[in-house]
Image 1 (cartoon, rainbow, N blue to C red):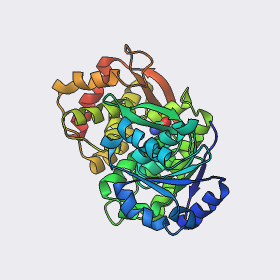
Image 2: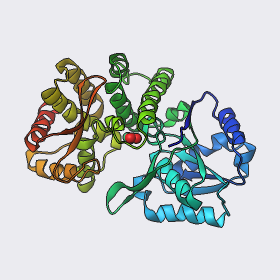
Image 3: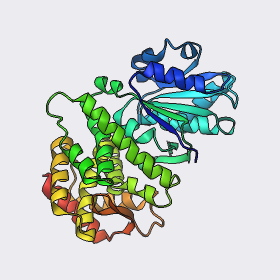
Image 4: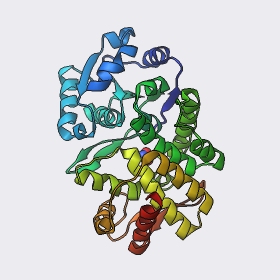
Length: 354
Ligand code: GLY
């Protein structure tokens, strides 16, 4: 997979203008959702290439990450006479960068695209690392491709208008990156103060570190054959929580589910791989304070377990594949965990998050 350039920018207009002029293209397309069309596009609309671009706008939120929306984007590209030498900019959160990236990767067997993530979750995760796709048949990201953006331009200014829930949701992926990297990084993350006004300068520097951690992992293993599985920490049980909440018509933001998944998976890391108790305790207390709790009872354990068995990270439906840690940065991939241990981790969740 080709390497993508990650730009942590200070001036989006200047950086984007430079990046656009480094591309040779015939037509420029800009994909936004209804929200980013209104609130983010104005920041870049004075750039001459952007003024002349064809705009494609799709519905906001994950429910729109469908084959129908994808077909709509292909249609707009086709009707707009895009060629293999056209360029697309995806301006939005994870839905836009995932779906837009997949649309670009598949249109005429692939056109170049630039990601400009506008939510914290997409800055530190979705827009970086080349995973693209759509939901299908009720399953998240069921259809997709590895296709890196040529550039990812990260402007933390967008976060100043983001709501707290979306910031804290993205922050869960940063916490995960801290846990798979170094003690110092993890410490900085759990000490970040969300109780007063957010220190955006500090947040931007933490975003830079977080993206570096992900980039480094992706560079070593772009197609998730081994070490990229470390990025799945918290996600096996997290995805089950997310699907469970959705099934109960009470959807939760992805990062909340990941944070709750981290509680269970760090517990499993402690029991199975000796992950330090103190670090488990501090991380759980940070998550409890900032993410609240998903309501479920032991009657729901089988449903949650069922969701875990359907996780696409499993190598067979008979076993559930986990990434665990024996310490911060000490990663154990491909861990098969018993049903009893998983249920015990759900007990731990219920007792500690109480
Ligand atoms: N979101 C995990 C990954 O990019 O591999």
